[in-house]
Amino acid sequence: MAFRNVVLALAAVFPLLIPGNVTAADDKEKAAAVKEEDGKYFDAEGNPTFKFQNDGTVDWYTFSGYRRYHSDCHVCHGPDGVGSSYAPALATTMKNMDYPTFLSIVAEGRKNVGGGKENVMPAFGDNKNVYCYLDDIYVYLRARAVGAAPRGRPPKKADKPEAAKAYETSCMDG
Image (tube, rainbow, N blue to C red; front, side, top):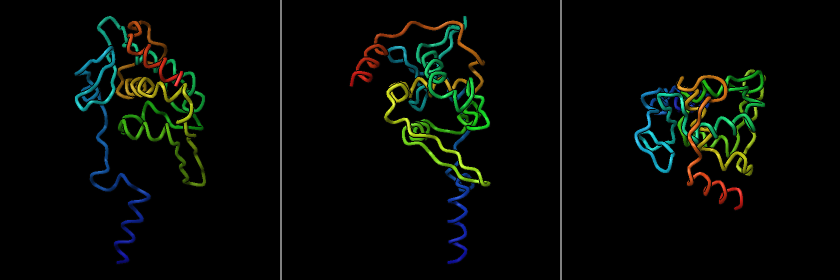
């Protein structure tokens, strides 16, 4: 019984050591767009993803994610998701974070305590400037994490789809 309690305690502290809890690292192949709906792209598992054209044009949602990230997230997580002394580099962290986990952390927040240091990610579930654009922020950070998007503002962007305009209006006015 004592051994079981030790294993459970370690599992609580080190969840990635338990088989089945390890998220396979994301890469360009997994993030490849296989489906498009109204200008929004999805990977083979149905998660939002990015699409870059050969001429460097980025899809609207990734461009919007860049703008929204730099509006609300870069203060703590650094420009282009490279991190800071206050918060982790999301361009690295996102390689091992799935879409539902990202949504949960951003909406509900998170507190990490370790090594005498406490890091707090505030909840943004009530901030329309964030939650109305969660997919956009996710695809931008995913593109940064897998090395598809360089640092800086994307030089070219696709036009804003009508579906994006309609969703933005309903979310911001709702």
